[in-house]
Length: 157
Image 1 (cartoon, rainbow, N blue to C red):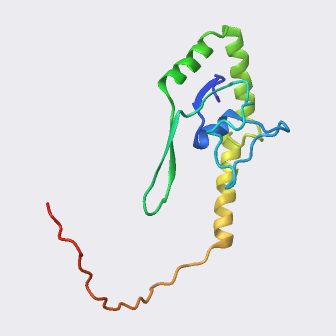
Image 2: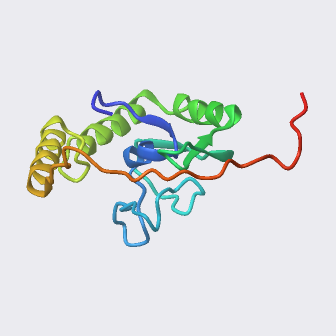
Image 3: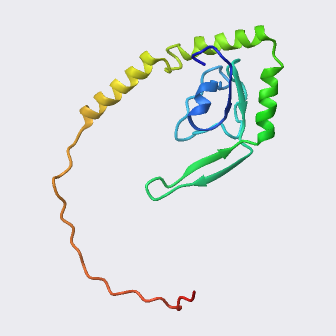
C-alpha cells in the first residue's frame, strides 16, 4: 500500500485494518471486544484499493497463556479469483487504486504512516510509565501437602 499498489488480503486479524471496511454510516470500522473481526463478512464495503478474501474455514487454537486465537484460512480458489480480479483491471485502474491505497495508508486516519506509528509507540511507552507499578521483590507462597491422587483405572500402553 505504501508503494501505491492495490492489496489482496485475507480478512483476519490486523490485515482487515488495511482493507478499511466501512459501517453503514461510511465510518471506518472500530474493531473492539464486541466486534473483533469481520471474517464472517458482516461488512462488505471497503477501500477501493482492497480485494478482500474471506476465510473459508476458521478454527480456534491456543495455549495456557493465550487461551484462544482464531485461525482463519482462505480457500486457494478464492485467492486465485482475487488475483484474477486484479489482473483483469486495466493498468490505469490499478494505478488509480494503488494511489488511493497510498493516500489512505499515509493519512492520519489509518495511523499506519511511520510518523503515526512512532507516535503510537511513544504514547504507549508514556502510558506504561504513567501506570507503572513495580512488582514486589519476592512473593511468599504457602505450600501445603496434598494427598496423592491415584488413578481409578490402570494406565495401559
